[in-house]
Image (cartoon, rainbow, N blue to C red; front, side):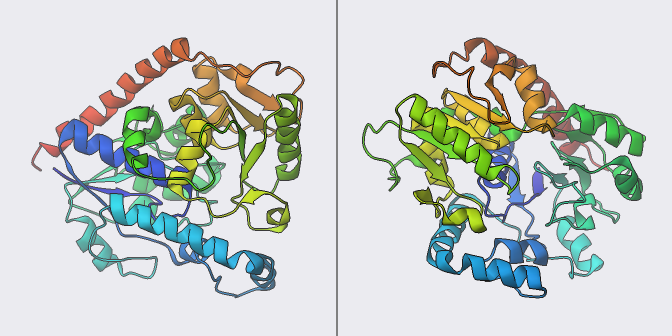
Length: 376
């Protein structure tokens, strides 16, 4: 069975990278499939992830100016992601983007028995890197599947434009209960809720990636708190809260910066972390403070204490899985850290719930395996 995965596999983003690799690993190990990443990368996403932005408006000109002092660090960061992909990812032969003709797209996609769209926010029509190709808006011989395709904040009105393409998928799944309800309004099919692929795999697999790697930001037996926050909204507030929490427990704070706007000018930031730096720093932290789903997920995988910082506009993906796993006490609303009196974790009971969710998700993947053996 030859499977092509269509996702944001070239995004220089820790979560995007690890969910893609985890899904590939699971399909190869569990189903002995030949798995490739479809070599599709939108021009807009490539521009956003690159060192030098293609200047086409005043906002991008300002952004480029702000980023100038960090060019060397951004270049190093990009190279780390590129090296990781070169080592662990296998791409289909033809490089494609939104300007590739439909005939060429169909020819490339039909080299596979099954195309899996996901995971990640591939069906989020508000996403900067989104193009309609992620809905596979053309007829294929290959069977179309989604795995944990997230719609982000997209609403029914905008998604209905793509409903005719959803109906052409053999199987549909998403990461969030809210997304399930919205997608089922748009299509005539049942939509399953499944786990993010990073949670399929235990720490032993991720440790194999770290074998022989020395993180330059990690001293032997060093104790520290780690903070990773995404987006501009509430960034300063969340960082200050993490600083207070670190002071509360007399720990130095390491901050991985992923935002090269004005916030990048703060002191003592790690600006050039690659995928293996993220893994190393999460694995060895005394506590992880984040507003990121995947940093939260890896703290759980490595049994590290963590706290998820949220504002009033709750992220249903993070809050939903935390409630399901009975870990809602790990949510910090706003900047209130007063209830945190100790850094501890005993996730045994929570991981039993996670094991049950894994079985449900594997049951969905088993359907893909059966489809691959059926000739049409």
